Image (cartoon, rainbow, N blue to C red; front, top):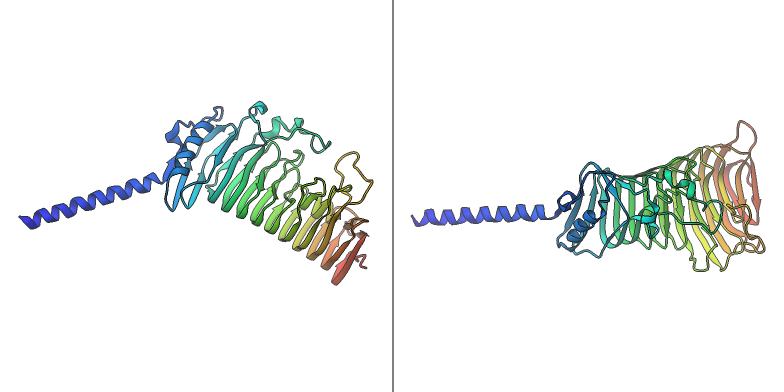
Length: 399
């Protein structure tokens, strides 16, 4: 009789342990549908999302998850803020978030922001739809310096140890993705889509960040597919398909007094289709301070009817007129262009126009083969110390 009681006690204990385990496993998943969220594209579901995030962020454990099931969810601006208790917080977006088209709701320059988080994941195959078409006519930033800044689709601000994969950003009002102040973040299999004529819709922009990897991405948009800004270092852009768009750019730089150096950038295994630029470094004249761009590698790149495939432009001016009283103070050194081939949509396949005050040094061209409509393409070079290794076509203006 006693042995039966002991067995019963053990059995009950196991049941309790199993139940607690199940509760614990369920407790690590915070489904937004449990917080008053509705699959309604016309509602503002941001309060319910924020409640789910707040509880998940306060939960301890190895990994907690905020789950967004399939469906369309109207969303006003929201900031998902850390720090969080769990080692990793995972935002799994299976559905589609649709931004408000009412610009009066946006008091800052972001729509969906992830802020100050260590250990962060974003995945799920979902979509961030900025619904930007109704606002693009209000964007004058491509024409004038002083303009109204529209909200970015997704902001990653001060993320450490982040991984973003299998999500899409479409029709952003301005930039699609902005990475600021991040350390060790990877974007893998991210898709960005907007019409080629949509203004200032940079695909992925980053600044003041280190150890950033952008890989296996497809970007078609109205501005730079990837733009690498001030304070960026140890950046890898790998296996990205770009077009339409303005290419892969470092810059623009040399415009503001608080800018920092850009160092150790590798752009490799890129396909550019019908873009205005291929790979580019762009800086402004009349720079307020001296900065540098150094240790840059562009390699293994395919151009398909690209307007300016290789482009260093230190007289960058996207407006009708820009300051030209003094040359750019951004010093460019140690830049390699290797194994770049394909077709140019203009005669000037190679354009290296550097600062008269700070000429480019250590620019190396190797294994370049760019054709233009079956005719002879040309190279334009000014204020640059250039060396050529191996076959280079068009013939480089090496010094």
